[in-house]
Amino acid sequence: MQPASRRHVERHFIDRIGWLRAAVLGANDGLLSTSSLIVGVASAASDHRQVLLAGMAGLTAGAMSMAAGEYVSVSSQADTEAGDLAKEKGELAARPDAEIEELTGIYVDRGLDRGLARKVALQLMAKDALEAHARDELGISDAVRARPVQAALASAASFAAGAALPLAVSLAAPTASTSWAVGITSLGGLAVLGALGAQAGGAAITRAVIRVTLWGGVAMAVTAAAGKLVGAQV
Image (cartoon, rainbow, N blue to C red; front, side, top):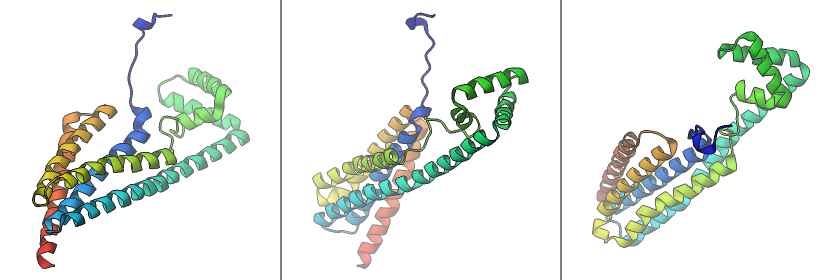
């Protein structure tokens, strides 16, 4: 056995994909949607109290909406997974030999010779037949399995955390400069979120930062223009 100091250790990120996707999406959406809302209302020449009220309403409604939407979406995925697993369990009980051949064929397609592939299939199925078929036939594993409650809580919490930044800035900034203050700090916040998300997921940081800040700037500019237009008409 190799000493612990000489063992080959690799870091992978697939086990984070469920909560990471929900958390990054929630934080970005919270920051961008709330900052855009505040910028739009502030551009309409509303008073400071209206700006803060709009920001707080956006934070609360957005967090609840994200939680509900994520829960429903991931629950649908979980239902599909459960249905596929139930069907596979029935097939294993009714036609075990056919299921052995099916798993053997999968391993042959991946590069094993038939004799070794059948041995692997038999050994894995002897340990846990349903787990073997779930992982290698259906692509379902613990790392990527749907977890609706976890996804909903991560989305709500991260949305609120993202929305807190523009709300805090709008509270501290003078009314006349609220739009600029919120816009600039929000773009900085989006850049940080993009970098953190890319680093946690093992992706390219520069590309992620450019992507989120570019589209964040577009979203806030369009909302500010709409706010000015409506404010001029009302």
